[in-house]
Image (cartoon, rainbow, N blue to C red; front, side, top):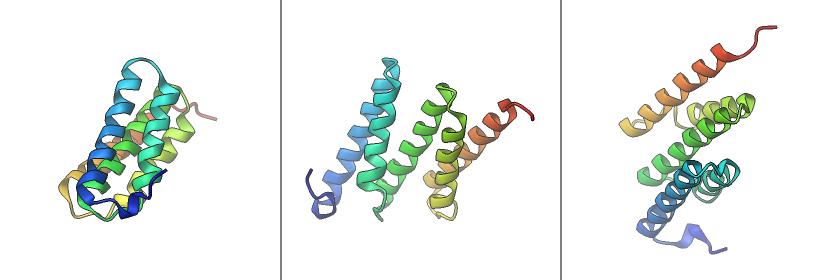
Length: 118
């Protein structure tokens, strides 16, 4: 695996975008585990990036991962993914990141409503 930290920002952004796209495509093909794996690659490789475009791609990967997990009824994991979006990006100034945090919180709320009551 190459050292992504030393790759130029444009290339890193394109790679992250491609991996998110790969995840979306795998999901459309009902290959959910592979879809989640693609999102995990984005999170693992670019999760510590400081560039706004990469931060947005990581947040998207987390939101999409949460949705994929929820679709598999892996609700605890989905809620964890959504919580991580809020934890990491909840104080972000960028509108795109704020929007993704809002989407994650709404999705979490929807999953919590579906959760069985004890």
